[in-house]
Image 1 (tube, rainbow, N blue to C red):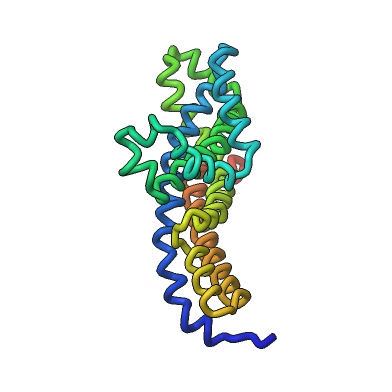
Image 2: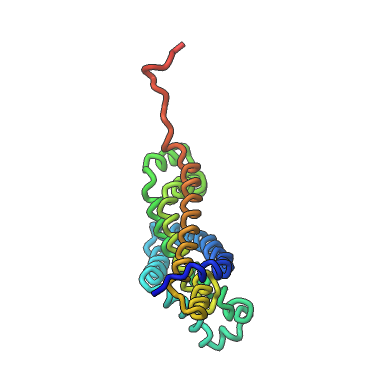
Length: 241
């Protein structure tokens, strides 16, 4: 087998043309999934078992079934119901591969994000919450001023991993005819009969995107967790006036 660098150079711009779609899929579903995951996480930490039951079932389903199956259920399955095809959402949203992929990615990642947020909230030191209760904070004040800011700082490393998993999972969008990076790679490899070279180049693109995500979250983590790197002055060596 002869390795052809020329085919990579020739078709690399075509592969790059799929990057905007890949970024859109990850960014939109990531934002929507974060919002939905936050709601699910707050329901999961409720003291009412009936309130916890629905998000538990939701999370169990979307974490326990393959993302590819979820994409097919939404893209191919919803069209089997006449009331959905006759709804106002059919033509602009549910018939479109892009929005079906967004829905599937959002529902899937929100289940994982919900568990990440729930774990972060439950790992907040109880002393901080007791201090908020002691000064008379309401639950809403405690949630917005202490619980959520602290939870987001704690969850950032795990959340960055989930975003990278979502980036890699976005490659499944090509199964419903979306021309993201992997979709472009599939088209080019079928045209040139050089799958190894083309998918190698596509892998490099995903590596670069993952690197950008890691750097972004590392910056955010340093900003939000500045208190963890604080070094108090040495009292013994400091000059006391």
